[in-house]
Image 1 (tube, rainbow, N blue to C red):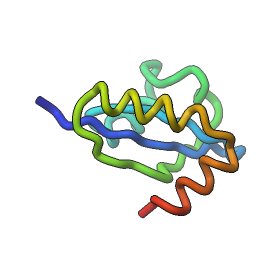
Image 2: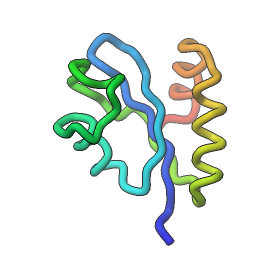
Image 3: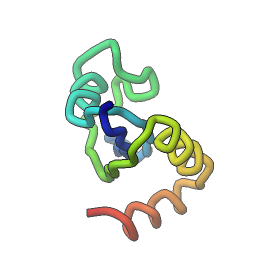
Image 4: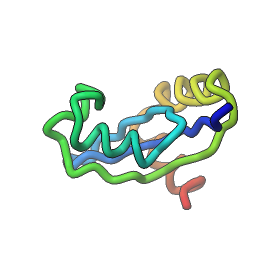
Length: 85
């Protein structure tokens, strides 16, 4: 069973995108170069990985993703600044 990760990307214009995956590097590449990436991120590169966190199970990752997506942009920025690497 693969470990799931929560990740947050910053777009060229400063927008934040939150997602979950089992392979952050692969997913970032998909967002950047592939049609498998999120439509929200198309033509918004370059993308910068600003946060990632191993979570465990898919359900835990999705629960945390939902919580982060409910935050305002300023709250997300504070979360990244507080919890980021």
